[in-house]
Amino acid sequence: MKHKDVVRRRDKLAAELPTAELLRGSLLQRTIRHKSGCPKCERGEGHPVLVLAVTEAGGKVRHISLRPEQKTLVKQWLENYHHLKEQIEEVCQLNQILLRPEP
Image (cartoon, rainbow, N blue to C red; front, side, top):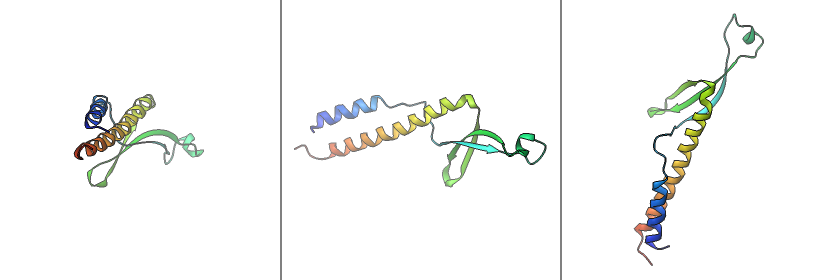
C-alpha cells in the first residue's frame, strides 16, 4: 500500500470520529430489594433498575442509576465509544505503515 493511499485512508477515518456522544462503562440490569415493608420485595420480585458501571482511576467502580428512558441513549453512546476505539486502532496501524519506508 502506497503512503498516499494510507494517508487518504487515515484522514477519512479521522474525519468520521465521533467526538461528543461517547460514554465508557457497562450498562447493567440490577434488582434491588427493600429489607421490609414492600410487598413486591417480600414476594422475592424486587425492583429492576438500570445502572451504568464506570471504572475510575485506581480501580474504583462507580455506579450511576439511570432512568428507563435513558437506556437507548446510553447504549448508543457506549456503542460510539467502542466504535471509536476500533477506529483509533485502525488509525494507529495505518500510522505504523507510514513509519516504514515505501517499497
